[in-house]
Image (cartoon, rainbow, N blue to C red; front, side):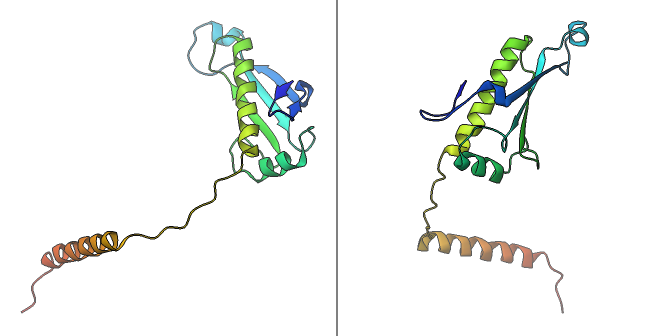
Length: 137
């Protein structure tokens, strides 16, 4: 079971796990052992509450496909068990981030001094540019 929050838990049967060969250096071992893990989690077919499903599908994350499937490739470690644990942790973190409410933006305005500094720097810049022009007689 993946614990998302106090009330939300996902059975591991919702996650499809596939062992694959890892990329990168590793000598002979990398060609023989499937130590990396592909995790697939179908958002629409899962046991998640509707709130989480809507928020996950609305996210613009490269790990979420158009079909609503989260794909996580874990290949950091040399053992399959550690990679599986790492992938599950990353999946849990992604789902938790969807459940967290976004902060409301507090509208602010630049101070008068900041506006003056900005205008002064623009004026100075335009004067510098003007000095580079050809002189007309």
